[in-house]
Length: 447
Image (cartoon, rainbow, N blue to C red; front, side, top):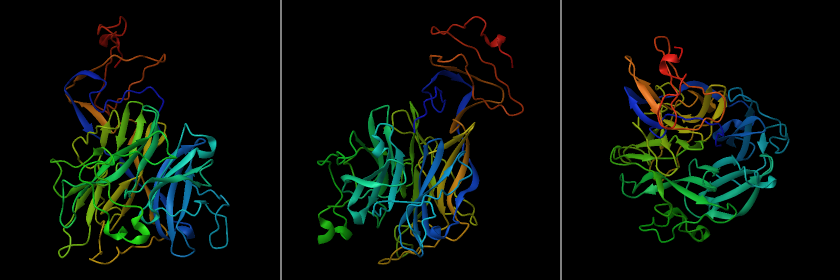
């Protein structure tokens, strides 16, 4: 969701006229442990968090469940006032083990493996909540909508008959007046045997989510039909991976290791002129006979964009690092799209595993799974100082920075500066011709 506040975030040179003695520094968040843990009987089995959104003054964390007993899959949400303390509302909608006293939501019989929930500020009330769903064995990507985020219905036909699984990022972008969906695609230029390509993120745009997504049907060098769907019951979908049918926006390049891929975007329209993404870097390991099928470890990077199309992954150091070997996220991390703000703190959320992407999976077998047990994290919490994904740090001996002209839209101008104990700052105001406004010189500013 795009923040309406008038804030200039100095994560790049977009708002900067000149600088001296300053360097850009990526600031990793602080891990704060589990935001929500497995607790209820319907959460024991398999669970995966999907999305964070804000509605009616509260945050909602949606997640998918595949209980070890009682059927499924199911979807549920927890809610929070501050993004830290979460409660499971008793919705009384879906029955589990003979009772409706739970936080399960109605998904109209759909069973997607991947989802992205968001609130549409432009849609009619009956379609206010939207879920972009994907499941290969259901034919690809489709849409569910709801007036309340509790009872969903299928809306329209297929959005896309392509393979685009793993966490998608979707929202209505008020800056461009379109829905944007960031999808997983396959980069054919970077094979890593026996895998014939790498992963990357592409962008789909549309004015109408009730119609199929427009794409370039004549894009060069398409992927072949996926073998597991070259059967009569699935052949009608024509399922294959996305290559260049949509424009790639976050992709590996020559700076990345040859085995690296970008698994997902986790894109957020943070401010009107700033998009932030938290792409998962997939560091692939050798396949059989020396390793497992499609195996690797994953951590989270930071990417910035001013238009949602061109992205900068900065120094490419981990924004969220893997845990030490005894931690819950020692081998796999994925950021959940969406954030929660509480005063000067920005809360972010991620999912993690102790197993690598393909650990234990040999040729011709399904990937082994480890059931969740009470106490396992459904989503983990990250604490980030507001607007501080990247800071412009001055030297210990001092430095200065001058912004480009901007309009003051209130009677107060606040600076987000952290000097800790030994630093201090002065500020001056200049007019549109870069001359100091009388009374607002550096010498007039209190330390």
